Amino acid sequence: MNIRDKILIVEDERSISNFLRAILTSNDYDVIVARSGAEAYSMITSHCPDLIVLDLGLPDIDGLQIIKNVREWTLLPIVVVSARAHERDKVEALDLGADDYITKPFGAGELLARIRTAIRHTRTGLANETIATTGKFKSGDLEIDYDKHRVLVNGQNVGLTQNEYKIVALLGKCAGKVLTYDYIIKELWGPGTRGNNQSLRVHMANIRRKIEKNPAEPQYIFTEIGVGYRMVEGD
Ligand code: CA
Image (tube, rainbow, N blue to C red; front, side):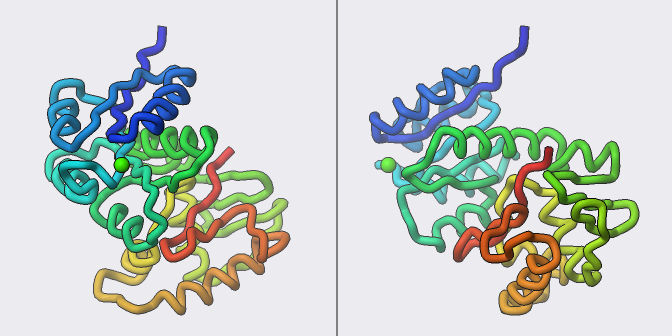
């Protein structure tokens, strides 16, 4: 018998928490629900969930504050569910340590993918167990060879520059997870680098020309508008 992962839903709107509970229960998760920030804190300590699905708009405590507090003592994965369309909230939630976000309205498949990815990232420390064991990331016809520092499509080296390779390698390690522009820039060019979104965008345009069949409709690296980039999950 498998031990089920336990998910804490923090959501004050009953229709949404019922919807979430139905999806998660039918996909073999144990589900508990908190309707306020205060209830969430007490359930985190008493139930030790494996992941939190967190609504940012709660009646008592701002969801962003909850992320900040929880991150002071645990790496417990947090997936933010937000009705707010503002990119700034998403970026702030990610910067405070949320693992990912999903915007209402969303489909069951999208939610489940975010949850799977967040739990896996937290458990393995690395996005991809296969990278650790084989030195490779694969998704469809795309392959990142971490030992030889190159990227192949259909077995052909696509000839990325060093900077382009670094960007793709980082996204591959965190496949399935959104990385903010700031995070990518700091990881690649050091913490002092600022205001380099423009050069990141230029690199991404070049990367897409080299790896995507149709750069306007990417199948490997997606843009999360105003937030960052996300690599498709590996095979
Ligand atoms: Ca709410």
